[in-house]
Image: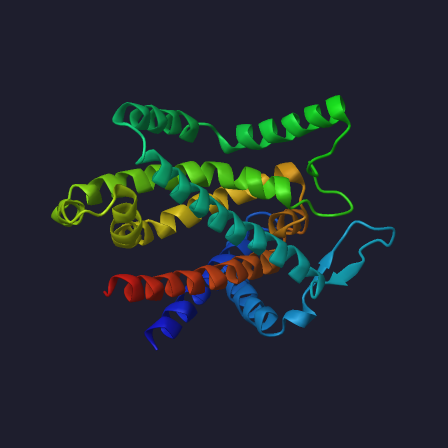
Amino acid sequence: MKTTIRILSIILTIITLGAFISTFQNGIHLSLATFWKNFIHLIDALIHPASMTFQAKSFVPNAKYDVFPDFLEFYFYTLSILFLGFLLSLGFAILLILITFQLSLKKRRLLIRSSTILESVPDVFVIVLAQMFFVFLFKKTGILVFEVVGGAERPYALPLLTYSILPTIFLYRTLILIFEEELMKPYVELATGKGLSGLRVLIIHVFRNSIVSLINHSKMIISFMLSNLIMLEILFNTYGLTWFVINHPTYEIATMSVIMMFIPLFLFEELVKKMKTKVVGG
C-alpha cells in the first residue's frame, strides 16, 4: 500500500511540474487558469494515451500523427540501452575489482590512480573519441566493426560499449572504497585464519556484504547513467526517447516520457532492495 501511494504521489508531482512547464511553452504565460487547464488535460491525455498526437516535418503542412504505438519503439530502445549498460558496467566493475585485489599493493595503487584520472574525462570526449576511432579503423581497413551513428537501423553495440565506460569507472571507484572498508572488518581476518583463500573471501563474504553499501548508492548511479544517456543519444543519433522528445517538444510528450522512465526505474529499485534483503538477511 505504501509503495502504491509513493508511486502515485511521484506521478502526481511529475504531472504538476509538466503542467507548470506548459505555461512557458509559447512564451511566459503564468496563469493559474492555464495551469489548471493543462493539468486536467495532462491527466486526460495520460488516461487516454491513444488520443495523443504530435506534429512532424512532412510534405503535408500541420499534419498530425498518433504518438502510439510508434513511441514505444523509441522508448524500449532507450530502456534497453540503460539497463543493459548498467548490467555491463556492473559486470566489468566487479571483474576489475577482483583483479585489483589480486595484485600487489604497488600495482593496485597504480590502477586506482589511473581510474581517478579516467573518471574525470567528460562523457562527450569518450563518445566522440570512440566514434573517431572506429571511423579511422574503417578508413584504414575497410572493415566497419560497429555502426557509428544511427541511420536506417539503430546502432546497439558501439553505443552500449561507449555508454558503459564511465559508469564502469564510477562503479569501480565506488566498489574500491566499499571493499577496502569491508576488508578492515574482523570477519575477514577470521575467514583468512580458517584457511580460506583471498579470492574466496572476496567473492563469498566481502562481495555479499558490500551489496548493501552499493545499493545505497543506486540512486546516484542511475542519475549518473541517465545524464550520460541523454548525451549518448544526441551524439550517436540513435532515435531513442531523448531524440523523440527533443524533436517533438510538447509538454504532454515530455511528461509522459518522464513518467514512463520513472516507473521501470522505481520497480527496479524495489526489486533490488528485495534481493538485498534476501542476500544479506536484512
